[in-house]
Amino acid sequence: MALIHRMGWYGTLAILLAGATSVTNFTPAGSPPPPESVNVTVRTLVPKPVQRIDSQGSYRFGDGSAIAATGDARPVGEYLANLLRPLTGELLPMNPKGDIVLVVEPGHPAGGYDLRVRSSGIWIAANDPAGLFLGIQTLRQLLPPPVAGVTTWAIAATDITDFPRFSYRGAMLDVARHFFTVAEVKRYIDEIAAIKLNVLHLHLSDDQGWRLEIKGWPKLTQIGGVTEAGGTPGGYYTQAQFSEIVAYAASRFVTIVPEFDMPGHTNAALASYAELNCSGIARKPYYGYSVGFSSLCVHKEITYKFVADIVQQVAALNPGPWFHLGGDESSATSLADYKYFVDRVLKIIADAGKTPMGWHDIGYAPNIPAGTVGEYWDYTTPRGGSPSLTRWILKAGGQLVMAPSNVAYVDQKYSLSETIGTKWAEPPLTIQESYGWDPTGVFPSYPEESFLGVEAPLWTETVHNMQEIEYMAFPRIVAIAEIGWSPNADRSFEEFAPRLATFGVYMEAAGINFKRTPGVPWK
Ligand code: TNX
Figure (cartoon, rainbow, N blue to C red):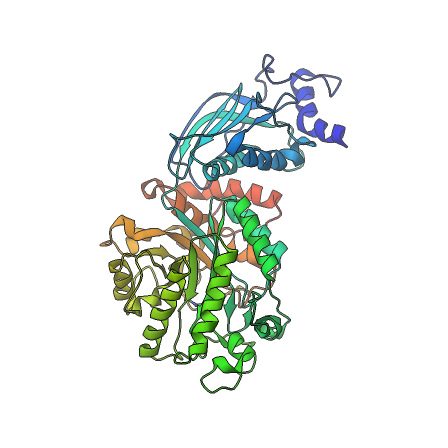
């Protein structure tokens, strides 16, 4: 088996280059390079790097290739070795004298990396392992797509200096409307990490389901955990499974943002515990698609015991800095009650040592702790109260994550004839529209530091499985990833489209069920 793999990987190259008769007759790295008779394709990248200078020559993988990654770089080196394994047929060895050098050291771009490819080797350096990991994602796209028939495992020489525009580059997955397994969430983490997203926001509770075990509140999962939209069986994560997701995300340098939506979007909790209702009567489970009809009982103390238990347990399970309290569409809570409730919950979160995050509606709260993150969901042309709500969050020393629903909500239909997707935020949401906006341009008068980053939410009322997750997210989430990463002045859809088409070949090789959106020259 190893031999067959090696043939595919290097031996075939040796045959092509030298007309060799034996697959073991190859030139190890370090020896004179094989003749440059094979044109090595210069491969484009998504997201687009900040600076790239290509040059003559290429690096060719061979049996002499080895990864040099010591100290803090070592785990990322092992990750790279595992990635290349399907190509090489055996684990690419780790060797401190290897020619694929990964370095963690100061002096590189903040949040990013430097990468060089030469005929003599590959060098990636970053200030921290997270930056190195991002450099590896670039390296993956510089390699040929891992499809059958590729014979030349080589990379054209290049110098890349790259760093993100925003530190927060998120995807949101709604596991409440439909439940997704640990394996599915892990797959999504790998998919978003490949395009340099570094946050996965999990929407863990809503009217249709409660998705995390909370100690002392067993009925949340016994009753709230077994339902989902449409009436099919739901599911939930045990705390151990949640920790498994958090640890897997950390291995991909992805931070989990746990969201428990409140005071509205709480029917599943209200169905589980009668005492959380003002009436003292448990609500019926909900399988539908409406919003804005449920509320925790704001003037009962048990409500705050409930919230504190969730916040504290989740804070202990998740090292990430943020706890997201939702706070959207609380139409069944009076404004006075909403303000009182959100103020108290913001304090519970801050007291647990976490930075509060919420949909921008939390800007109604009178007392917002400094650092609080408001997630903006209104349109790219702000309407109604959204300018004053966001301004209040900023005035309190907070920041915004931009997820305008008319361009970043990847649950919106691609076209009105699609069967999957919702259609309230001005669909169709085409790839051109997902790409063609600037987060800071939504509020041009706010200073640049008001914007922590961007996010692509995937609500799942109409999304049932991994295939449908991928279909809705890809390729539009690639557009959002580039908006979050690349300098705005460098971006145009005309230039993005062919790079996206190239990435399509990689998505196909990875088995991602993406939509071949019109306007992109898919291969
Ligand atoms: C709005 S805008 C929601 C979600 C729905 C979504 C469907 C916002 C913060 N919440 O409750 O799932 O629309 O597109």
